[in-house]
Length: 185
Image (cartoon, rainbow, N blue to C red; front, side, top):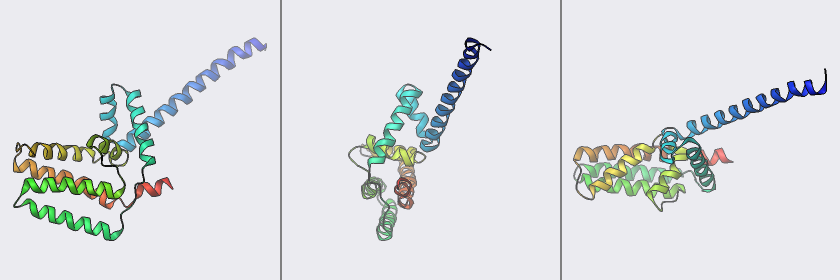
């Protein structure tokens, strides 16, 4: 067989193998992002205007998150936060709007204690999405109701819903125990 014939056979095979390998890599990368970010994956892809831009955004979030010093809570601190949450829930009976505001402040305090920056809600969402993408919808919903409540445009049932939403993220943050820190080391 001549060299030209051999090259005519080998080159297309190498190109096909390279394309299959590249495709497999992209699919694996996309699946990893979907698994890690949960519902936040589709939300970010849609908000970014396309899959490539959305995935680029998610990888940037991962990079920023890796630079944060997210730490586990000592048992005593975890207990203190659990007691504070119980107090906020008890407050809901007599002062539901105030309890929702206090729940928001408590979640923000817990975020800070764990090592998450708390400079702005949108950045909090991005930072949390890396490890808490599955409960992030709860935080968004709770925050929206809390914001509406400052203008007295919510019902007691909506406020109750906000407490349930805050509780979902609060519980996850409280019980996380530094899972991210161990995974990085």
